[in-house]
Image 1 (cartoon, chains in turn blue, orange):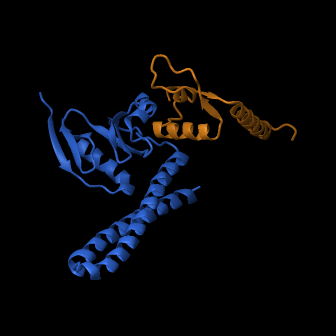
Image 2 (cartoon, helix red, strand yellow):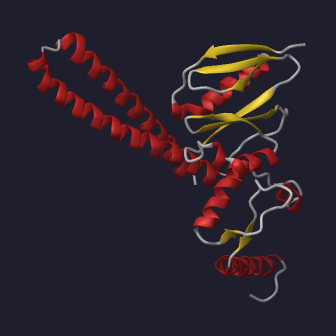
Length: 187
Length: 81
């Protein structure tokens, strides 16, 4: 029987990746299994005979397949299937085993390092985005009177989009920071 | 990973993310290094060996643990302190 493929449009924001894992787990429990992760478009295969557990690992330095050899092999040796990589997020799955903890990070130190890695990149993106907002804001406001760019149709919408990204990244950065702090204080 | 579980009679289960992080950290600290000789069966597997620094740190840690164990023994089995 030919497995039926479906594509679903899902957009996720980086820091709540554990929610993303749970969502893929729930989908799999319903018989829809992620096959090919994408930035927006995720491909699922329907099969009622299996159930998987999905886990994500952030390794932004391992985007090129040539660098992934030993990394992927290590995970495969541990029984995880590598589905692919998307924006530095590596997707793994293995058959669901009731009553067993199926995790990539099994101690606090390494999990904390994982969170910090995510927060670090969020921080860099946030700073870059603030710089973009600042420069394009001043540019647009200086250029506008000369070119006759409409304030409400052009300048404000563009700056609003940049500002929204800054808010989103800032929110993620703060949330991740809180998560790290609570974990560190739970000594 | 299988070895870790066997060595600890299934008590310690190490996830691959934890192992990958630990290997990178140990390499960065100079306690282990990648060997020249690759695993012949699979060139994608990296092989690491302990460095001299690593051996020193390991024996210091063993000494610390032995001391701890010795103190524990004295406490439990009585004897002179």
